[in-house]
Image (tube, rainbow, N blue to C red; front, side, top):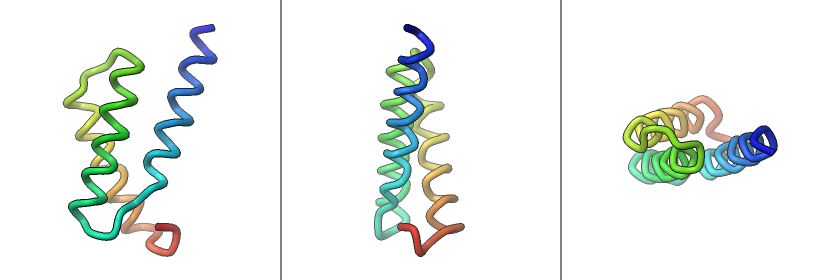
Length: 68
């Protein structure tokens, strides 16, 4: 059961990061929200989740602007 829950949380996080945003601030905010949500579900650090989510979404949007 725990494995299915972790897989579902990872999928939700990936989908959350797929929503990029138009500006750098929106990209960071959307990524941070996805990171905090994932960290909360998995029992991790919310601050670390926000930082990783924000950085990951900004990096993704700059690497693949046509997908955002």
